[in-house]
Length: 171
Image (cartoon, rainbow, N blue to C red; front, side, top):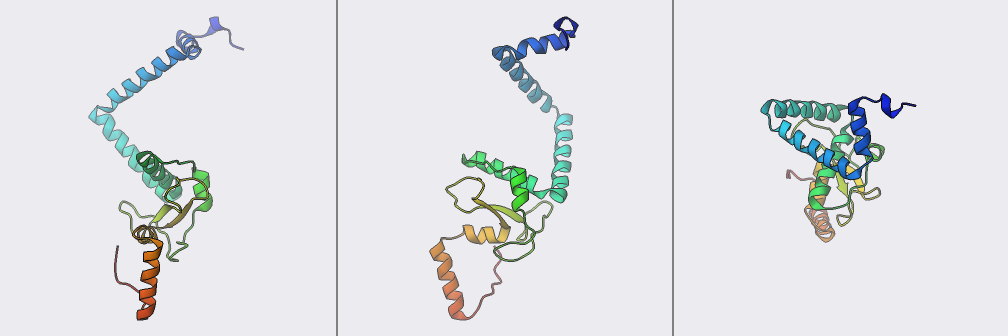
């Protein structure tokens, strides 16, 4: 066990402020301000953007559910809804085929395509919580989000009465 007298001045400083909540909070605030100031420098900002791009593309190829989780968290903060899912949960429900349309889910770089995976809330009034999310294609999500159940039934009824089930429409 290390004795207090054997600690370096920096270790003594951190040991003291960690034991005092007010000092520790002040220390954290100073660190946040310094980080914001550092980020204002163009070279730091550019280096951070490069790093973010590299991480994003690395995750897109190796673990796309991590990027999907980030998007869920951002949407939940903006919409002020609950988000309790984590990367392990998304990985467990991740699929390579859209369960609604049966099309392959392909993670594309940049812009979302019809085949891009999308995390959908089954009940929009609930947040991103286990049991309320499913991974479907972007196209299925856009179709689902564009109307009510009655409207979707009316469309199905209309298409069945005309004897057509295909569409050349792109959303």
